Length: 65
Image (cartoon, rainbow, N blue to C red):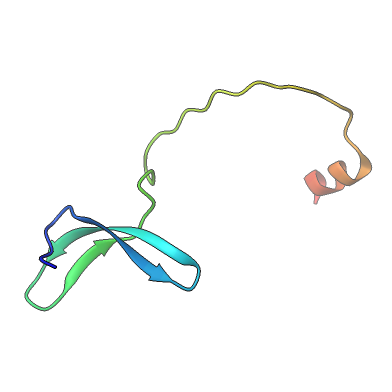
């Protein structure tokens, strides 16, 4: 396979496939970016509260540490 800068590939790991992007091709090495494609991006989420309830003792312990 002929590698090109910007090419998107997948590395196979014991935890499953990991996407990567070829960033730089040198004489004997290739620099790749293994960050998630959304790393460093500003994300905006829309959500809707479907239900509310009083906190349980377990909830409060988890929050308070």
